[in-house]
Amino acid sequence: MRWALVKVCLAVTAMVVVAFAVPLGLVVQEMASDRAFSNAERQAATIGPTLSITTDPVQLRKAVESTQMGAARRMAVHVPAIGDSAPVSIGEGRAGERAVAETRRMGRATTAKVSGAGSALLQPTALGSGDIAVVEIFVPESEVSNGVATAWLVLAGVGLALIVGSVAVADRLGARLVRPAERLADAAHQLGEGRLGARVPEAGPKELRSAAVAFNAMADQVVELLANERELAADLSHRLRTPLTVLRLNTASLGDGPAAEQTRAAVEQLEREVDTIIRTAREQRPATGLVGAGAGAGCDASEVIRDRMDFWSALAEDEGREVRLAGVDRTVRIPVARPELAAALDAMLGNVFRHTPEGTPFAVDVHDAGDAVIVLVSDAGPGISDPDAALRRGNDGGRDGSTGLGLDIVRRVAESTGGDVRLGRSVLGGTEVRVWIGLDGRSAGGPGAGRTGRGRRGNRRNRGRATP
Image (cartoon, rainbow, N blue to C red; front, top):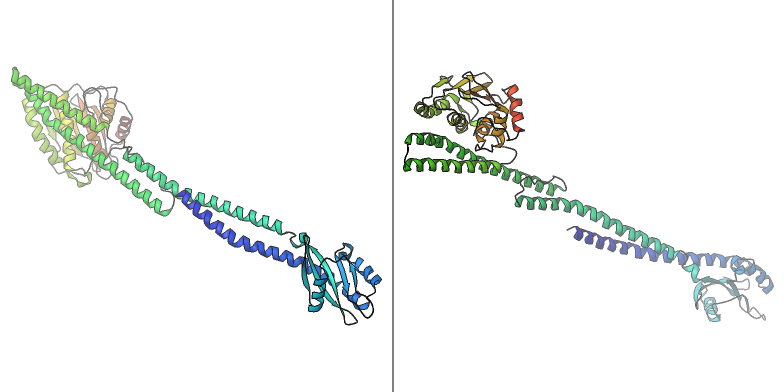
């Protein structure tokens, strides 16, 4: 496209230059010729007064030699025969007697070619006797073409400069058009190769800027769809761990025997496969995680907590765990979708059953702070030796069997409302997970927000209590 524009501009400019330069050069040549012959006519007119007074050869010769053309031996005077006197020619004549006679007969100025030298201007002049003398001025070829070659060179130079300039301008304009198109094509190739971060600068002509905006929007949509798909796969897989935890704990009561061992082995294998799915989905997740979908729908936190506690209470009773539930006797609306809050609760309660011994009590408390709702999940277990490491592991996954998605689900739910997550020591002596859920889009956690931010920049080397 770029070279096509250059070729078109080159052809058009060359046509314009030829159309104007050639006629202008011919005009310059004609003007030089007219200038030379006009000068010759003025020189011929200088001898006219002398011819009107006298035809004496001596006087005429003196008059001719006193002129510029006469001194340059370029003027001749042809006097016809008057009475008994013979015709007189003064100066060096080049036109020939025939041309002189023809000019005398016609009575007007004529020009005659001089072989290999130039031209001769023949100017008739009336004498006092009524006869006609002819004044001949020689005009050399160099004078007729004086300045023409220079003018042609100047015109050629100007034309060449115009062509070069137009080609340069066309090349720059073509580059301005082509580069955004090349960037767009390159970004499309990168996106096709799986580099989802490829974007196009919104520059260039209006049409290409519109194409760049559309491409970037499409790429963002692709990234968002893929991220949603991976988050959904990880989230659904993680939710499978809730019934898997129950199965794993129940298999412990099957006793010994081949069937019991096979059941326990099958549950463990299924749990490993689910962990692999979660870990794979999280490793492929883009760096910019998405906020919990549907957070703006809202739900009654008390109702969701009561519902999930009904499920977990049966398992707690089997393991001899004391359960305390507080703050769920009234409606507490939060801007989080019901499935998201249920997944977060399952993640926190599943950790209690997975990482604390049987018989360890736990509690779930809900507090309405006006601009935020605080959900506390506490236990009397051994606690977490390094809460910051656990938060980091919740953000980027663990390496020792935990997927790290549990706290990440909880964090996404909290941060979708402007809240955060904090880990600490509970009043029961074990771990306390405090989830701040903002009600007005502002961070309700205060200092806790800084802790979450540090957790995002951490690594996965340290591990306290496993938090899936």
